[in-house]
Length: 407
Ligand SMILES: [Ca+2]
Ligand SMILES: [Ca+2]
Image 1: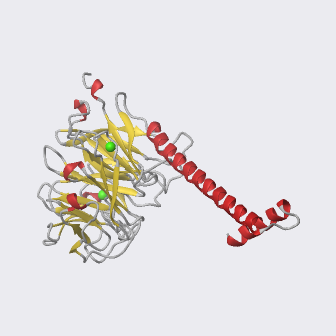
Image 2: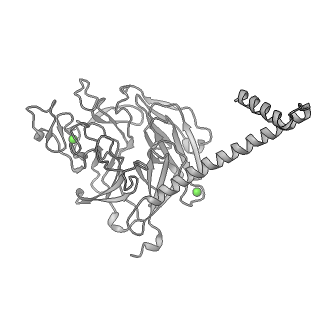
Image 3: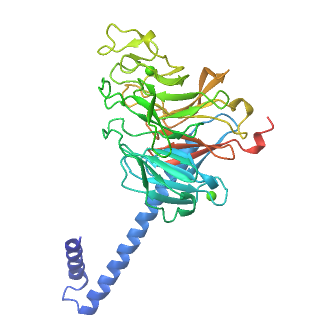
C-alpha cells in the first residue's frame, strides 16, 4: 500500500510539477491524498452498512407468513446466530457455532427490535446451546457445560465463567449441543453421533442426557438419537418432544427426519439400526426389526433438517396456535432439490401430533437460491416469536399485531 501510494504520488507530481515541486506542494499533495483516502473509506463503510441492512430488511420482507402476521428484523448483529434462551428482563441470549461467541440482546425501549447487543463470551468451542436458570446463563460447548452467574446485571462486563461439567466427548462431528431447562429444573442436552452413521462403543454417543444445574447426576434419558438440535415439553401433558436429523446418503427421499416423543426415560429411538418408522439401515440394521425401537411421533421430509422446536403458549397469536408446535427447518444440503428452509406448524390434538403445514417460508427463493437458514425459535413475553438465522447472522420477530386480534 505504501509503495503504491509513493508511486501514484510520484506520477501525480510529474504531471502537476514537470519541473519539480517544492516541499510545500508535496505536503499539500499528501494532505489531499489523506483526505481522499478518508472519503473513500467512509463511502465504502457506508455502502457496506447500507447493503447489509438492505439484505436483512429485504429478507424479513420476503418471509411469507399467514395473513395478519408480520415479520421484522429483531437484530442483524448476531453473526452465526443459533440457539436462543430468554432471561430475566426480557434479555435474549444467543449461542453460535463456528463464530464461537455468545450474545445477549436487549430491547430497552420495547419497540420489538433489540437496540443493544452484548458479547458475553468469545473463543468458545461451538457454543450452540444456551439456557437461563435462577439468574445464571448456561452455555453448552462441545466438551463442557459452563455458567455465567448473576448475568443480568453484568452484561457490560460479564463475569468469568464457572465450569459446571467438562467431561463430554471432544469429537466435533455433531458435537454441538442444544440446551434446555426441563420442567423438572434439570438441564437437557444431546450427545450426537460422531459420524453420518456408525455404531459407537461408548454408550454416551447418540443420546439425550440430563444433568443437574450443579453438574451432578448425569444420566441418559434417550438412546438411538442421531443428532437432535431442539426439544421442548408439551404445555399440557408435560411430555418431552425432540427433533432428530436422519442420516445422509440414502437418497433424496430417505430416511425421513423426525419429531420424537419421550414417553418415558431410556427409550431407544432407532439410530443407527432403524431410521424413521420402517427403514432398516443397510449396514447396521441387517436382521433387525424396526419394531424393536420407538418410532417417531411425526415425520418430516428427508434432509429438511428440523432443528429448534417450540410449543406456542402465548396469547398474541390467534387461539388456534395455542399449544401447537413450531418447527424450524434449517434446510437440506444433501439433496438434489433443496427442501426445508422454513417454519412448519405441527398441529397437536390430545397432546399428540395430527397434522402439519408450512407456517413461514421464503428463506429459499423460487429459483432454489438459499437466502437464509432458520435455526431456533423463542417466544417473547409479549407472545411474539423469534427466529434465528445463522446464515444471515440475524434474528427475525414474527408478531400478530393487535388490530387483527378481533378476528
Ligand atoms: Ca428497541
Ligand atoms: Ca429415530
